[in-house]
Image 1: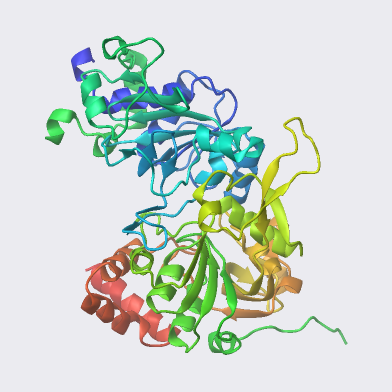
Image 2: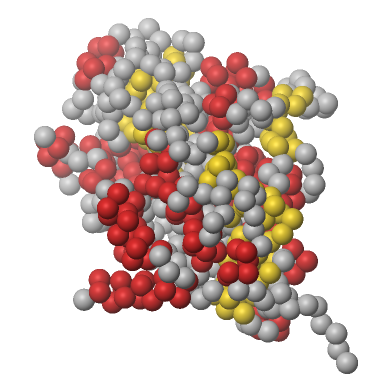
Length: 263
Length: 297
């Protein structure tokens, strides 16, 4: 398992796992495949206290491979109790984002005007509630200017600036933690609560990220484009866990194909 | 002589005959899971119109929207899960064919039902603050907490009660009086729907005697008490093509065919309707059976 064989999907999984590393004993709640992989990786490495579910209605005591069933159960988490835990706050959800804007607002509702959208998506789902109650991160498998936009069409998930504008009721527990894309890792700690580039994945340049982003990205304090760090590579142990335990069938490549293979 | 509570068994047609134009109808289950689809199909066949539909939506919303039954829709999402976007719902939204649309956060939706179930005008919560849910629904107000919890007097969303004229829910088992159990892992919110409604019609896979409800099943699974239930209908496979575990999983093959027709040409949708939705529930189930046999060849 040499470093040449480390794939972009592996890097993304480790970056997602890092987002959950310091969460302690809370409900790690991934939406989608790479977030599920990353959360389970975190539980097997940096944060064994993490509470995980089958994505349906039970908490799992073990850490099964992606989409596997039949592991030991340690609790009950039907939808009604998910809402309880959201309000309780001991939860970190990583959601998808059809659009995310400069101020870290997210849209999964619809594209275009709400009254008659050009493209109706899922609806707000739990995004408005998640973002004013528990830690929230986003996963974007295909970083592009169509996803990273100056202003989202509809605000489903609330970024820190809007939360502050809405008052302490909204801002008190607003905690947009990380945005992980196939190109890099971001937070929303830029000046004026804006999206900030924290690292670019190995093989990605800052220029590529800037090119693929529809707004001006903040950079780490005092850093120029040349100083932006590279996202860490997964360790040997992590690679073994990803490849042999959690995703032996390579499902992750459906979401994050290797850049060469994608062309 | 022993007196028993009344027998509430009804037919699908009797349930739908008791509904009226313009009613507010809550539909239980969740997305593509344990939906009272036999009752929804009966509404499709009826002349009912101008309905307000309140649902964590799946194909129930898609079908009613495509049939032009909905005057007002209250939802937090509409999804078929394995097919994330519901094509009939997308079509309705993108052509603005539903006159009034209320999109809520999914937790607000629960809080609204809870307020109605508790006969309160609203309940406070954080969800919605700062989001476009409040921008697109300016009639939803905020309320200022009278208590300082360390962050000043917080402004919170006053989630309005989602009062229902009628709730339609589907569970696994019931007795003739309306006591009912769910046997899968998730109760969803069917008890809240029932308590938020003036009348609740319950369809079930099987009607059993009262003792049978807790034979081999923990009493905690009796989700609905008969005082919450107006009528009971036995509709085997009545949640099809949504799931009703452990009785059956979602019919993914059928759902795929539904989504393809819904997202296809008008002719393709007309053919789907003709094949599956033009007759009564027995005809539907027979057509589904034929579809299953044909596609397993």
